[in-house]
Length: 320
Length: 256
Image 1 (cartoon, rainbow over the protein chains, first blue to last red):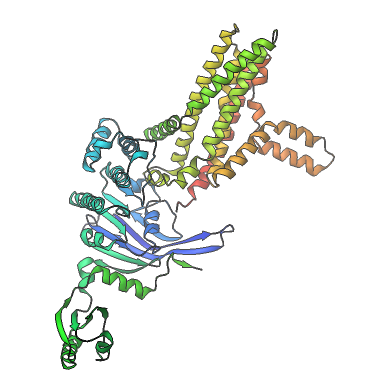
Image 2 (tube, rainbow over the protein chains, first blue to last red):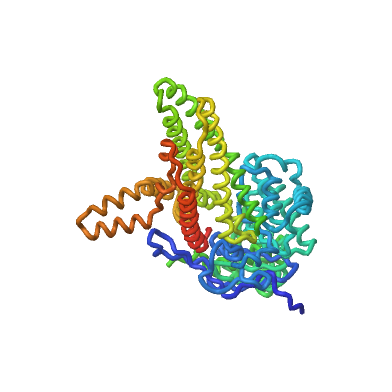
């Protein structure tokens, strides 16, 4: 194993915001979050609103100071300027200076990242081409659409060719075409070997892009692992689609049901394998018909919903 | 670091230019041209004094308003519009960001002062008055007065909202010009507490009258260069303390 420092490492990271005129109201946004992101992987930070995803990212980017614990980028404390030298960041709803053109803004970002002269010119032109913004490069940003701002936001993040890319809700508010383009751009970065930390509550994006995910709920890390491992770690279920019996009649058969749904004349239920076999026989004995029996596909969304429900998420974090 | 500083400062200048600060210069030019017509009619022997007084006074008021407007809302605007997220997350310290933005403001004010001074001296020449050293000194030292105002605006902006910041900076502008009077007034008091408070306020507030050579310019009095240099040094020193405090507060801020 390589001794190279991890792109991202947090240990027991906590953040409590103090609110109100007398700063006497406390909102606990993060509670002892420890995570590590390995080089070259796309890591998804998943969680409902108020789970602490953005707070984690803001601590990493030195926008917010941790109350306790530590956050490191490439082995250096995230508060150090040098730690952010190899990092590109796209915040949620990026707000570039509207009085600049797209090219001027990417140029400014490049110069703050240490690029100058011809190298800067070359990288700006290259990056604008990569995000498909060369046609609007000289337009003022105030005339850009949401999708164009998002693409310029990504351009400013990748212009210095960072080794680590931190993206906070990069697809939020985009139409399906924009979302697809943003996903393709992230995939291209992954192919280039860039480590990506990807924060979102849009589960299909995580499934499509991430190697590993962490689920945050109420400021706590409640699950972490590869998408495949997390999904297959669940108890296998079978799904039965029943006709000729109502949901109350199916319930009365006495088998434990994990999921139940009644639409028109059809009842869909999920249960474990052994109970499924018993239920099949019971349904037929009761005069019902089993229209379909199949293994239930346990998706990341199911896992997410179950995790959130289990952790009893309070929207906006815990308030003392 | 110098290049990063230059990029950020130049961007600040570009922001002001694109937000049409040139309108202020146009307003100043119009005011001078309009006033010239009136002054030519009503003054005979004191023409030089009136033109100098009016020109330098208008310049000082307009640029002070600009300095307060540009500085007191700058950081607040960056935070409210969330543009700061894309700047502070770069490998740039918050201190460097703040100092560079201040430099951008001072570059803008300096450029405006230059153009306004050029218009003012042109007007003098049109009236057949030759520009003098006291007028040049008054215009030059005005930049140092603007530096103190801008630094104070930045300090306020580093921890408070735009309205609070602007109101307090305007208050400081007047108090700074009245610092001498407040000190003398309190010195006449019989109460020891009032005298001590007057002294404390005098030493705490920036003495903006020390940077006001407009009266001397109107009466053609050339101040000793040593004194002018000391005043400029005082302004830089006072501003350094204000900016250091601003950095201290800005470093502790969370951008949610």
